[in-house]
Image (tube, rainbow, N blue to C red; front, side):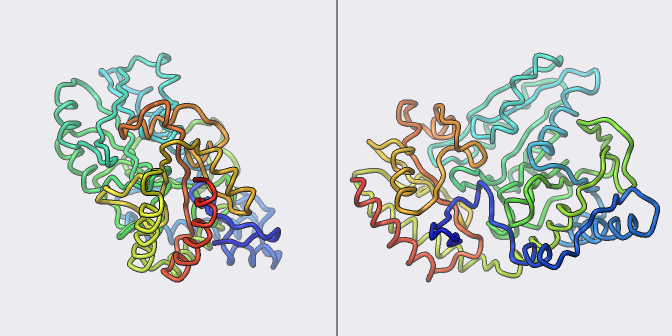
Length: 386
């Protein structure tokens, strides 16, 4: 929990996490960069050294240095678009792009530009009411297709916290040979073994501001033999091929924030705490609604969403806001845009009620002590709503 200077409380970490303490202290020290890491003079080499330090730390943390490259970008939207557009725009073979109704808009909205390419677009639901992927059905569908298969696989859903296990993505890869990009944006320190990535999968994408780094910076892993094409054109950087001057300050903030977040994360403690909140809130709602992920077998350790039978999520959000608590509605990065919620519709919720939900996304170092405090705060406001 962050208690803001204006005495407000922040429960919207999936949208953007407050800056890590180590990042704030680094800025306060004044020891950040103004030189171009592409420059060959001493100051340029110093900036490049900090980028290399971050790169090495990422390879060590995610254990992909032997098989994958990493490139830094402006965040997950750029990362996801880089790989999907690269795949649908290259090669002469027949192509099939599979997007899911539960994907984040950064992937899902690629459907709006597919008419520029000679591809077959497949928008699939393929989830049960618990939000779990129907993997066998997906594999059977893919086997009816001919040509290149491109899949965006959302590891952790930003709205509900429901996990699609990485092992299932590997199983799809083994059964079909599809190109699989993993949207790993919400995974860092939110599930067990979040840093044990399979080298079989083609690419993984992250955003720094989800775990306390600066906004506007992220990174992606991709296989070393992958012929990547970037979304922007220009001179190649000295560290990797993405054109433009690297955001050294943002990149180094990834190293600082990730290191700090890892030190604070206790999976078992956070899992017990979020399950306590789910049980208490589901019982509190009773006939008024439910916790959306209550029947899901795999969920992350910081996120829960509430569904209301007869209340619009925005109305409930406003009640929390007026009482000094900030929560989310809809997608974590587009909470100000409220159309029908396609994620909840995919879970079987009626379209007319698909906006009857709010999301709580807490700090990754959630504890039982914090959870009990948060429940009492949330309870007071929900009782006013019903």
